[in-house]
Amino acid sequence: MSPKKSSPKKLATESQSENEIPGLPEDVAAIRAEISKVFDTLGSDGKKVGNSKNGVYAFYDYDGEPIYVGQTSESLRQRIGRHLTNQRTDAVAMNVLDPFEVAEIEMWPLDSLIESIVDDERAQFLNCAEYTVFEKVLGESAIGAVLNEKEVIACQKIELPESVRKRIIPDIIFEQRKHPDIRIARRASTIANLARVISERDVSDGLRFTLLTQAQRLERLASTRIKQLGIIKKK
Image 1 (cartoon, one colour):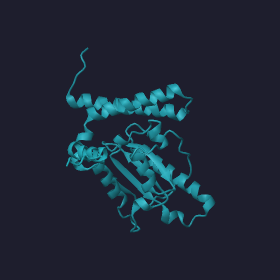
Image 2 (image 1 turned 180 degrees about the horizontal axis):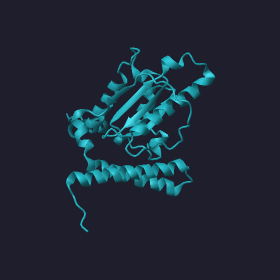
Image 3 (image 1 turned 60 degrees about the vertical axis):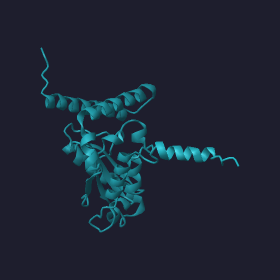
Image 4 (image 1 turned 90 degrees about the vertical axis):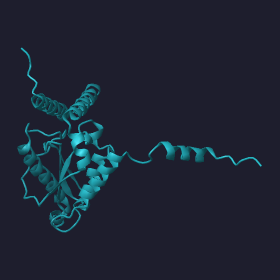
């Protein structure tokens, strides 16, 4: 009696189990787990902050420098999750925002404030909340700019609720990703990709300003690295 042959599908599965690790890379899985944990943080209202349908958020890099501000009416969990998992938000698709750069997120859940506002005024309330956060982070920025391509419309500032700000990178990964040489390479690549997009399309003025902001961020990081290494330019 001849031995029973394994099907190609079974052989492929066996080969994969022996030689490959299925699913996400370990560091990516760890970061996504950390992001989920941050979304589950309880806000001042006792509810999971990521579940707030309406809210404003800000991203910060490994130096605590603010890099992007946004708003949502679809839930903080869904909107921010799309940014950070490369699910083609405009900012990621246009090479405005590199998710690799995001080390911390800050969220302002607004459901408790917006529920008493009539539908026609809710969009304006969100715009004013975003502008309030935008002005706040500009004041915190070392270069006085963030990577938002679209103009954040000026309006009356509002009193923001208590925010939740958390690191989304586990400690074991943070120090490696924070290394300036790695970040310089990522930033230079992002700039090249963004410049290519600009050269191939009819783009907004805002996108060109974003390119300038990215260049300023790269110059600052590279200059800090030179000083860190004690390198002196020869005359």
